[in-house]
Image 1: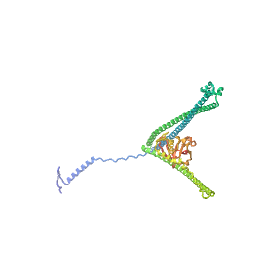
Image 2: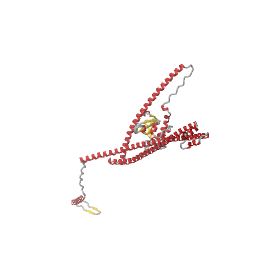
Image 3: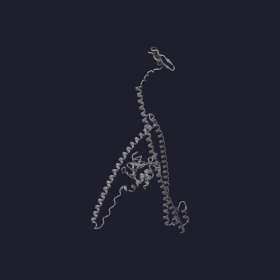
Image 4: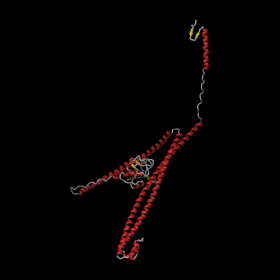
Length: 462
């Protein structure tokens, strides 16, 4: 069979049967072999061996982690110690503040004593001048009656009337009335000198009190400066410590700071829970005491009512027919009805209205307060004057027990719980185991649990 001829645009292949097909197959084989010779064949990659740490490397990693944890704990201990130091500086500052208030209080008292002594001395001096004039009139009368002028002249010398009375001739010329006037003059002169001495002593006392106030003020300012420096140092130390924590724990500074805040918040919550527990116990004791007082008052009123009824029956038996029975006596007012208890509401309202005002040692308002300045201003709204000194405030109010606390009562802290003279902080009880107070420098007027800090030592009711 003949293969048909096929024409192309570039020439012509002429088929010749088996011979042509064999030639075509050879050409294709050569082409395929050439093409295969120029295509590279990749070699299979050899796998890398796994990294297997040695036992020694694992042990070193464990030791590094242990050392890192110890360093983190040391930094956290430093932060806790610095916070405790800052709190102690706040306490020291508050004590210095109240020492200054005490010195100012004593200075005011000394000035008042000096003014009274000076007034007595001036009055005595005027009386002395009047009596000197009276003796002069007696001497003039004696002269007009024929006395010797030369003998009367000593009245006007530095020695005064004594030379006149020492003279026998003058004594005969001076009447008995003049003798009495001279005795009064002598007594007044002695009292005048005494009052002058008292006035001088009072002035010295004022000077001493002023020096004491200046020293107390300097101590307060030094405490304030130390506290401010400690706060600044604490901020730097805290930032550095948190950065170190971030590096050691391989966390960001933000996460480390958040952890520290969380630890502090946890400590605060634990302290608040303990304070709340103590406050609840205080409320329980207060409620128990109030219930006992109410029961005692109820029993007392019932006994008094029964006694009145018995007396009325006895009187009715003895009275003539038609006579009216005596009027019923009013019940004795309860403790809570006293004027000071009614005024406690005004004192509390005023103190709570100052919440947010910043602390200022020696501050008495209207927008900056220290602890005794706040309680002084609050009770002034209720018409009760208290001095600007926590020790004096306790001295001038009625002392009560802790379970007698009522809203408006004052709570005191001292360095010696057996000595009220060491009181250095005061707050106002507002009920439910809480109080309002001006804590210390750097903090505003705020409400806290009575037990937010140390247990209080003394309690009083204005």
